[in-house]
Amino acid sequence: MANKIAVASVIAAVGVVAVIGTIAAVTASKKGADDGGNGLSAGVKLSTVCSSTLYPEKCEQSLKPVLNDTSNPEDVLRAALNVALDEVAAAFERSAHIGKDAKDNLTKNAMDVCKKLLDDATEDLRDMARVKPVEVVGHVKDLRTWLSGVMTYIYTCADGFEEPKLKEAMDKVLQNSTELSSNALAIITRLGDILKEQEGKSNPVLTTDLVGTFDEIADGRNGVPPGDVPEWMPANQRRLLLQAGGAQKPNAVVAQDGSGAFKTINDAINAVPKTYAGRYVIYVKAGTYKEYVTIPKNMPNVFMYGDGPTKTVVTGDKSNTGGFATIATRTFSAEGNGFICKNMGFANTAGPEGHQAVAMHVQGDMSVFFNCRFLGYQDTLYVHANRQFFRNCEVLGTVDYIFGNSAALFQNCLMTVRKPGASQSNMVTAQGRTDPNMPTGIVLQGCRIVPEQALFPDRLTIPSYLGRPWKEYARTVIMETTIGDLIKPEGWSEWMGDIGLKTLYYAEYGNTGPGAGTSKRVNWPGYRGVIGQAEATQFTAGVFIDGMTWLKATGTPNVMGFTH
Image (tube, rainbow, N blue to C red; front, side):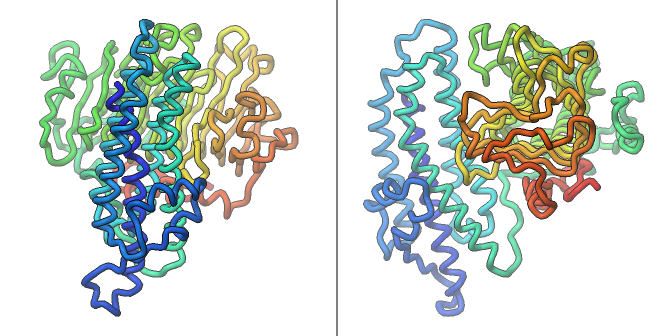
């Protein structure tokens, strides 16, 4: 584990390299007419670069050895990589002892998770470092998203250690990486502000690979069985789900009765060609699949669909009390970019006594879920990182049952609050933003928040809230949503004392229902109350998850602006 943990120290150096290259490219674009457009004017003043960061002194100290006012991006990149390699070696020595003598399963599991997350962080940073300076300018939003994801992987690594001394030791090892990557994010964010002021066409979104459309990957079936369309869905949406698909056959069919090429989902995933070009389609026939499934990071553009969210179900029962770190309890994990899922259900049956028990974990950028169902209790749906869109889905749970630090937008979804364990309260959301420059948050738009049947008799006595701040800069927006009377008048709950109450961003817009009144809401400094349309616009799909550049291409029904 130690070797991969040390690799996290590369974050700041590589991230800042990308930013410096971006600044140079902006300078070049302004001077293109003077130099014929054949080169980059790469003069970068260090104090200016670092002035917009949260840790300016550390920013200057880290860049002085690799940056001067005459450096060009290529030289900066090579020098910064050398600095990063030196830091990796030093961090390796510092972290080698952490947890090495642990004998409990939870700590061992946390070590494995940490290794995987920091490996993912390193891979993402290498991808960012490969982006040419002239290409970076048009993709500031993407870089902010990806760098925020890297930062999220870092703190997820440290959070996996429940032993206070081990967590503290890991935090110290990763502190330098966290602060320097925060500086890189601040510089990218400032650059984005500058670019907004410039005129000109924006470049197409930069993605790892193809993001296909439903027209291209039509599932070839005669639609969803009428009995499996959720009754709570509006009539026009029900008709949409009943429409027939196209004629293209799936690449792989999974069926427990042997009528497909594979009997398990994992077998189908393992058979996906490593060099497959295009969208790979997997049809999972009706059945309850008791297996733990991961769409790996190196497998982009998978489209998986089933026979309905209560007919094709993937289920597991790993839990935190069972000796697993939260992220390792997931039944299904979508890590590849461009993942699309339709008409499937995912469950974690550990129950309230299992505490943290994830049904679905989503990490891949530009992930889409349509007519899916996520069933659990605490921590049902882990919207971990990057951009995600959920449409016509149902999420069921109790404590923090939608949580994470992605830019996640839920449209026309049903949030069903379940009856929790003894002495527990319900929290629909627990957002994990750790830096004010992260473009992340949880947005519920055009949704319904209701109690399950078992909770209904006790819905006014068991406390239920819209959410609580998992991290210091938590950001959650509830808009155009029907809020049931189960939500307490104060609306939101603390995490632990006053942590995050001044720095969080909680807001509401255009909500209806008996729980939508805001006259008795919390009066925290970070609670915005009911915001205006101009402010709410930044949380619509077209803006918040940059949906105009990729979401429409998936063929998923969506509203880029307001629903009404």
